[in-house]
Image (cartoon, rainbow over all chains, first blue to last red):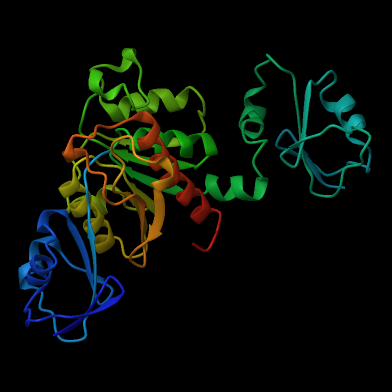
Length: 67
Length: 268
């Protein structure tokens, strides 16, 4: 499947169903992630219930600690 | 002619020199500031709309003049915009206490600061508190320190834990929110919460500020439409690299600087 992730085109070797699976595919821990799907922010409690489809644009920020 | 002297508008000034006005309004002034520059040639004429400040070193100005004098080194057009703004600060630790100080010193009119925690000794290596604040809620200590240098900023102190759900309510009315939390999971939740619940608000977050790595690696990136991310994105406090006043302070200063630029109307 084709996704645009953080501004870059990615051809994935498998079909992913939701945002949670995209995070897993790119090895991003869910609890550290803020995600925008087609410019809409995704509720972190709904990563596995937010479907992705071919051609979607997804922006992922993976936070690290310290403040 | 219309000029401002120590913040007060004077409409009847008849095009005299700086020296003439100094003699009239503040005889014996040690420092003269014209449009945020220290004036060296007092024989220059003033122009329509000029902002002049005269001050005597070591003398506490009259209450009505103090606010204008505090901001006499900033361009008035920017100071006016900052005064009209409201900024939220999520977390009052190493990042938040410095962001709050920079914004309060710059004259942001209203700050809404939320943090559930109290000041303890391990905070003092990087957070802008004193021994006298130990045991005090951080938001209360922050109000106390800000009063010491800018009594003209309105500070709303919320001693509360910030969540995904309450983030929009706590910071209601803020033009911009600074994410200044410590824990990575909290950062992700609160950034998501503010983007979700506050559709017009910009957020300036920090990620990757731990350790003694290169200070210049702490950069600003615009990620989503309304999210600015400060840090090197990788230096994680969870890796045991520690937290230092200098590097955390660079990140906090980058955050507050982005906020000031946005409030001044810069397109970034």
